[in-house]
Image 1 (cartoon, rainbow, N blue to C red):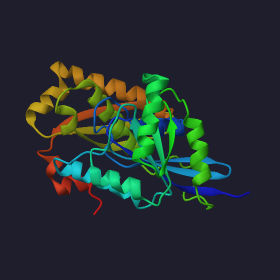
Image 2 (image 1 turned 180 degrees about the vertical axis):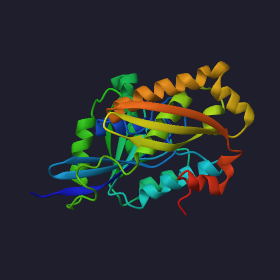
Image 3 (image 1 turned 90 degrees about the vertical axis):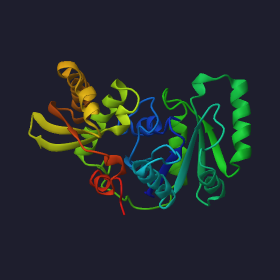
Length: 294
């Protein structure tokens, strides 16, 4: 049997549905999803296996103009998507015009890598407007094959997957066939907690937060986890904790439910909050949290 394997890297503006697509293709929640920009901070691999294929999917942060060191590092993850891609998925949503970074957009339109342009969120429009959008993008990215999908409703996703498999080179698998991702368990604990912070707090708070899981102890029935929520200022610490610890309890309870579903085990989760001043602009801290790879 001929076996195909390769890297499919998903790029696009913030909030176009990259993480939703990744999870839909995987049939598993690997990437956190919120309506806030910059929800995805890392490049996350999802390894989709079949008898005769292995699709290594890569979800990347939304393309922005960086304002501080953390965002610079996030954009390095995006730029690296061109380095190893066998297929590039450029994702846009209905009504969108261009990528926020013109130089990056030009890179997409001139690449020799096969490009699939996925026009997402078509459940929010009518056929007439959709047709104009398809024409618009075909003109803008003539090197791309266009698919109209709804990642949230799982519409058109299977067709996209079959196309991706057809474009992959003949190759043995890059990862063991039972491997789901390249990230360790603690990464998904951190992300589950961070997702709940994004959903429960407003303004600057979610962007000033990083989560570090200090303890992950697993036995047959239960996983005991201790995680620290890092903030940049003392005032943010008080907001995260809330009145008599109410907000921290809420975040912990919501994250625990998601983690129990993800790991299929009972979870005991302890959360603490610490001040880590200006970590977003500190190269040493960013490297510690897995952002600066250089």
